[in-house]
Image (cartoon, rainbow, N blue to C red; front, side, top):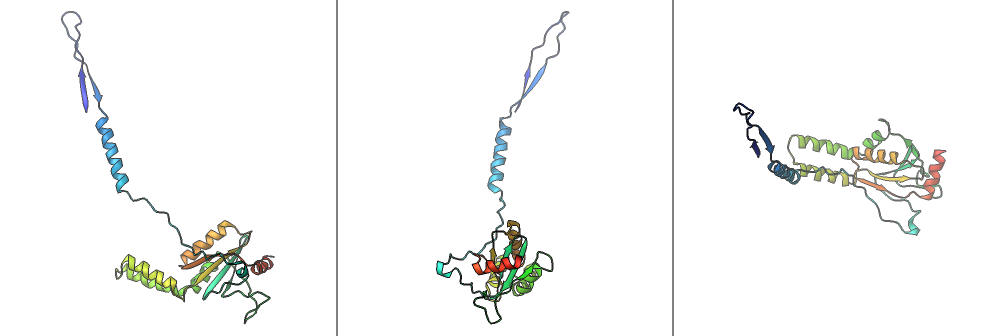
Length: 211
């Protein structure tokens, strides 16, 4: 609270008195208390932003006898990253020593352009994207709640018709390309993403392609 301290007047000859001087002193204690109360209130009632993360599926480490066995995945695609290049193949991997019904696996190249990786993922994961589009309309028209929307979207991603993705890199792959690839997978609503070790035969095939 403010206090006014009054000083006594002084006489200066002929009986005249100078007007009394007053000084103001502000007590800051109540203001400090109020500041701490407001700070405590906002700390307790504020909602802090949560970091946005993307869940990745990390498979168990294989045994030594299984390291050269290709992963069997249904409706899957495998991306191989090297330097600033992106290669991929669909379905199961077949090395030259054990070719499949259509021969050994052949790598195809793509890029981060609008007609490259994004279009590829959109075409391959059309089942989930179409399902999500229908859910978006229902959510917008308030036919379903947020919790129902998320639950049904997860069910679409787990469906056997949804696209599964494996990611493999060599020692020349850049972190930027890996992160960009993850971002594109997120945009395409890929439900199963698994970074795994590259096979020796895959690395040999990748090196041949890079050259």
